[in-house]
Image (cartoon, rainbow, N blue to C red; front, side, top):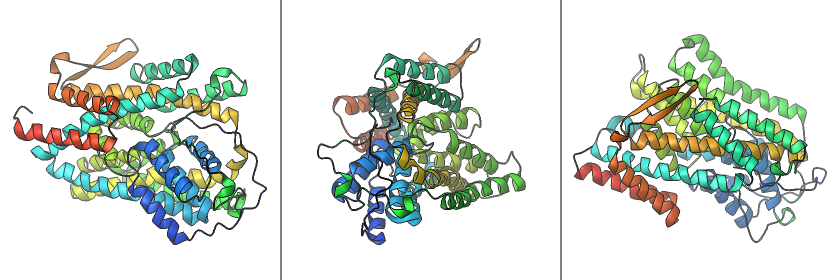
Length: 470
């Protein structure tokens, strides 16, 4: 999740040509991208690059990477924000809104339907086996994320040290995720400003292509569209509108229901998450898991794994697992509402306060970011964040493994240090076997995420149907 550092000329003074891309055609393309967006941010960005750059040639490699670099600097899901950014470049505000919303919609609907099944039929052997198998694949996928991101981000001992420090801070010291990210960002920025060699270099999970499509050869061209030029009036107007859409529901819930109501807590927590979760989807999941399970008690660790399995196996951002968290939180604290009605409202509220800020960051900053191409200090800051995220994802993988493979876990405390410690005698052997099988498939045979999910899910269902030991 590192930025791809490119030194690009300032094209902000070059007028853009009329790209001639019909808005209706763009909507169809964004819907196609949304339906194919499986496999986390790396796969989603690759899909966008293949369709928008290689196939359609609507934008070029340089502009795509520049937009990606900006989105990587923002809190929240970079793939969804990249869609909104490019949609805005092509068709102004409506283009950004449609592209960003369509990127989320299929996953929202899919996870909502699966959440109903989860709470209504979750104790049936088929559904229990399905989620048991999904957990095994999720462990392999998260470990793959550690390896993939680490191989690109940890190029020297300084970056490895940042990753190690982040892991120790969050796993052993329960350090808040925002503090870890901000500390890494500051270290990277200072290192970049000082020109320290350890903080130079690119890499990342963006696309790479042997035949580069240059901006001049695309529909948008090299120039900057008029609507993409810095316009303080427009930026303040759109930012104000989005800020009201984001925070007004939070304020209303706080005033009407009080700070302790489940909806107020959902709105407040996920609004905070939208501001501080730098570093990509897996970093977000680590923060949500830490707070939703440990602080709020909305769900159990195994259920967090179930939610991640849903997000991995449906289109859209992995951060959609937050919708599952909000669904369960409201389902279990329904008050006077029917639990399913309460859960649906919880899912909608969670999705709203998670993604509205994403549009705010894009529309407020994108018109000004063209002048930041190739800014080495910002790239160094992002690189340090990514190194810290490796440690955070490793924490996530270990946390998931402990709670998925062992039936009993207790908290060990030694002075200021506390951490989860499994009871070795409670090892769940079938879960271990499935997890090892998924890891072998992913790492040794390079099997894709979806086939691995399908295979482990089928194996889990078979185990639950054929054996009574669960």
